[in-house]
Image (tube, rainbow, N blue to C red):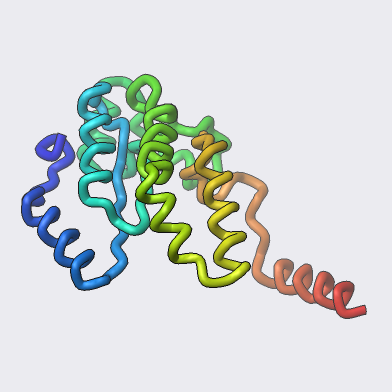
Length: 184
């Protein structure tokens, strides 16, 4: 998959970097994309396994989305998975359906990735040992509940929907009105 997505990264170097950061006490973050065209259960599981092997403090998993002017977009158009003018129409304000997953069950794989990464015994214990306040505790409970009940949103990549843009002046007026009510 690394060749398909044009990642020229050396995985051994990545593993050494994460290991070195961990030994130095530096918190790390890793971002993984699941559900590229041609991915299958084995390649998606390999991605999850790599995340667990790297063991960053924080991780983000998301499903692949063909963004404009990318090889994934070109391949998605070629395979008939997305209209060539989707993003042009979208940015011009046309109300379009969200882009569907490029492979079956990508949403389920993203959920599996989050749960299998964060719900490991060692990861849970590590998080519990880092709690220093009631606020930390509540954030961890909130995060735990979010992972247990995780659901990938279809509109996760929706930036601005038609009729949802609120000019800055109106937002400021609305904020001022809300603030006045809260104070009074």
